[in-house]
Image (cartoon, rainbow, N blue to C red; front, side):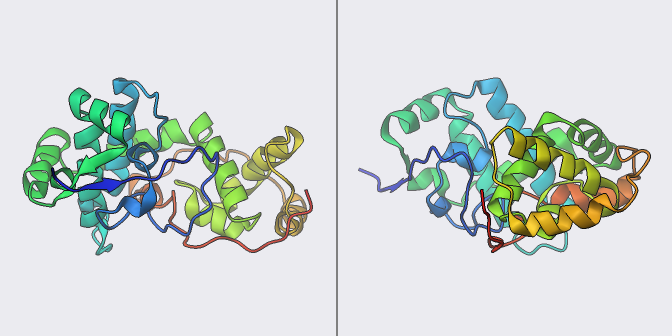
Length: 241
């Protein structure tokens, strides 16, 4: 029988690994489940899986990350993952066994998958970036990402801004502080010492009048590409709960 990759299952709410990208660079998937790579629950519907794939493909497309030598590998792995989860039969086998055949993770079909994606979605345009920006900033997904990054980097807000898509410290500091404060009040996250010092300094500055204003596509293009591991490693601030 073909050799397969055993994938580690994890129910952790937050990831605390040192991964530096949305999608791992090798066929081993860095111990992540296919669902974790896409950022969806195991119970996700086909529509939710497709939506997550489209969103991640938009961010990771090599055409939009020309200066990243690993962009093609990340995009390739994304195609492989969706090739399994996007197929009902393959997904059923994966759900039952927790394994995928090496053939499913080989690079042989990358060129055809890449061309298929380009044919369907074309090159990422400024309009695509603008649309993603408008739907993401100020939304539930952004709030979840801010809290996750805050916990992951133990209150190091410089790393949070490197990690969260479409963020700009000069515009979003007060918004992000409000998000963190709400998470702390709801006991979803602790208040880290590194955050305390940052928040104290931020509150002394006037808040932007319109932090969610639309920015140009050219300026946004880089911001959408960052995130979900864009800042490598974990912060080392100390939390006191």
